[in-house]
Length: 365
Image (cartoon, rainbow, N blue to C red):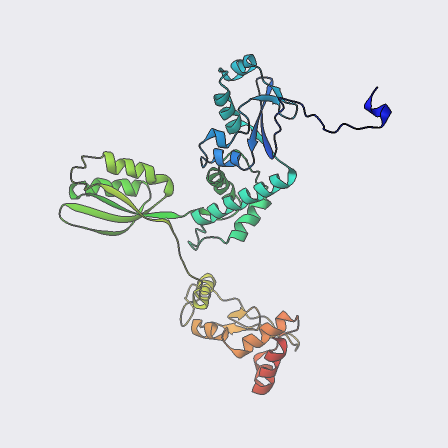
């Protein structure tokens, strides 16, 4: 008589014996030689193992077994492991699978990992590169935006630093960017100073300072990061280092301009592009001819000289040109421009009272 026919239930449910339940598991899968291999690992430990943060295999593997299918509990045969990996040692095969295999994660975990890796690569590029025109690093948002525009594809099995070097090469095709120079100090015996300077010149190094004694020469210079190993080998192998006179010391990993641009620096750059100098324009600079008179309107009339893009006018003197950007008239027109209203000329602004101007600024702030 069965329990179902009597309506009674078992007082205790029997569990299958010899069954190991894997919880919170991360599966690493590798397809090689026509075979499929899987290992069961702890979450977050696989990434730590690949980054050499975790070195204990017991802390990574949930089970010291190599499977064909972890979810079904089907183990790989020793013959398949010998055929593909050349050994049937489970731990050695598991290490190869963890290093070379694909980590099976959920869509949310994969998206979070890719976003973190993408931002880490962009951060490394910002730290290592500068704009060659200004010798200043790019903002993080600029590098991140350009990486998205060129559709850079992440490689999960490669480190962020390796991928950052690849990104730099790709970015150079789309924007002015280069590796920041390293500032180093080279110490060599005085008798080898000539050969050292020749080596630095051949590798496009810039010598910033030269000092030392009658026995030792010290050179402070800027070099490309890619030339560091060659310079280190040159300093170490180009003679005997008996008294420690030969050394290569890194002073700055990334040498670039710091601080913010000042308005004077920006205006100076603009005047240089326009060919303007202090006082009168240079003789070889040809100023644009004055435009014919136009009907009276709210827009200021164009005349000879370099006009302000907001107020108009003509400025052939650098000092006057700089002072204009600090004037109340320029600030007034900037407020009008922000509200998409027409600007006014100098004469119209002079007719306004100081009270009206101050009230105008307060109403638009």
